Length: 550
Image (cartoon, rainbow, N blue to C red; front, side, top):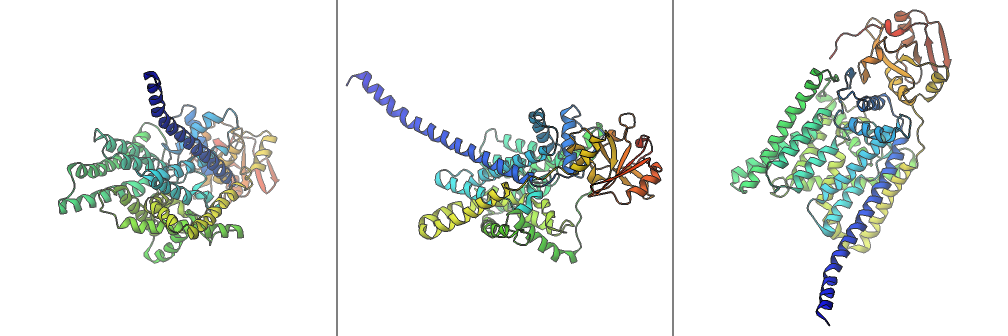
């Protein structure tokens, strides 16, 4: 063989494995992409089965206003959570990409919810995988993804609808991935600085990260650092890294508190400061029961809430995932002080803090209150995958005849639940009959109670403006300062001549208050359960203006 022939053969021998490796990576990327697309489609279908209320509709309108230049949301009153730096930019991006194809509507919330939940599944899987490779890493990631894969149908309003703390877990998981994947990154200050920026940015939108991330991060870092100091263990880099992350979290909390005030000082949006109150101790036993049901609801295993019968079967299968999360939590608590398990300790403490805070809060009236601890879902899935992935893989290899069929049955149950959720009939827009009647009769602006206001505006594709009003202590009608734009009540911009006084969710005693505020109407219409009162004047001139309430 010639020299050139030997060189070609050697080159082929070197290039062959590299080419095969690239091919395998490409195949994996395609498979992951297909899985993501399928999950997104299923979540979009399940989300669409629940109508979007005026809360989510208000977020759609805020994002639309930001997209059209009102970046500070001047004249807007948000709820007690602004979502200003999380879901609102996401909604604005969705609107920018798709609004030229679709009329503005509730689909923005459904697309955003499906996108958010898909991201949560991916990020929880990556956090579960950690720095493990090969079969161990794959087992961890698949276990975490499997636990989250099929949300319970009754949990759709909690995890697959309007912004309500679930999406806040996305940037938190990103921050924890940075902490976990790059502990030795150079320069050393870059990861704490990035974590500080992410958490500060997120806290502007939702202060719940004080419980879901900042407090656990600070507490775990402080306890582990104190323990190392007492034992005199740990190298200099380790002793520096965790306290620096705690300091970054504290700085982020301060910035997150100050930023909304600065936005308000610049003329931006108002935020209601309601806060979470602690329930009396006598309510805690009831809170414990609701917390347990809420935990099961998040993991798809709430057999008490499941309807119809087929969903009870799915919930029973999901009990496996809930049990795995509890087992993973127990194992993690035993590893609080292991040098290489910092993020495991943070996850475990974050779950406990969220469960405990929810238990003693006033939110434990019903299972829907579980939205306040929604972050427990991705945290628990990631922790279970991290703690039990390799154990599960080892058990499958040791007892394949017994465990492989059992795993196949459980996976079939999860896939069935996913398909069942995707097969649900999409819900019609809220107040669709009202929208059809108003547009058909040429009405362009009017008033209604909160639950019939933003939702009607969005369902009409912004063709009809319905502004929310409420009753004063004296029985007059006044603008409702919750997810509303003050400019909607400006008589120089809008001519509002009707009031929706009756419907599925009417304002109490609206007709009497309307007559007291505006005088007798010229016309009153009744149709499809709605009552619409009409005047030949601009009602915005006669509204009682509210005093500053923030």
